[in-house]
Length: 91
Image (cartoon, rainbow, N blue to C red; front, side):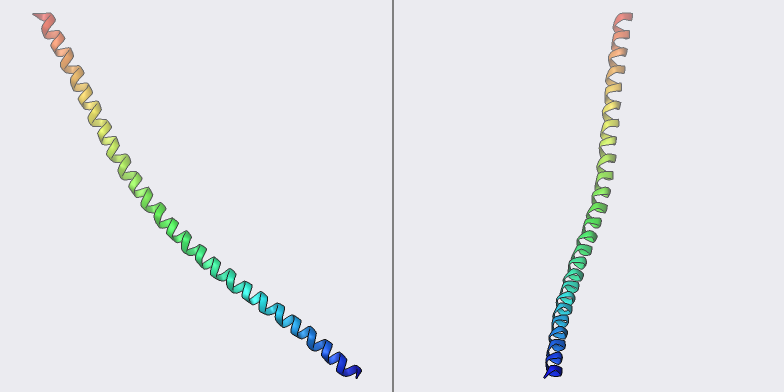
């Protein structure tokens, strides 16, 4: 009987270890899925960041040109006013 009891105890321990290993394998598989999802999200964020960077550069360039046009118009208006003042004071 003693050997039968030992066998049952050993079998119970083996069953417990098998259950623990199954739980661990399930956790590893879940972790792998979560890592895969995270990797996909990181790729999507990287693509979005790249697109944002391109759009921001285009927008910066656009407003730089608008700013230069405004400065050009302002300088032209100031020069016209100066020319008018010079012509008016000379006559």
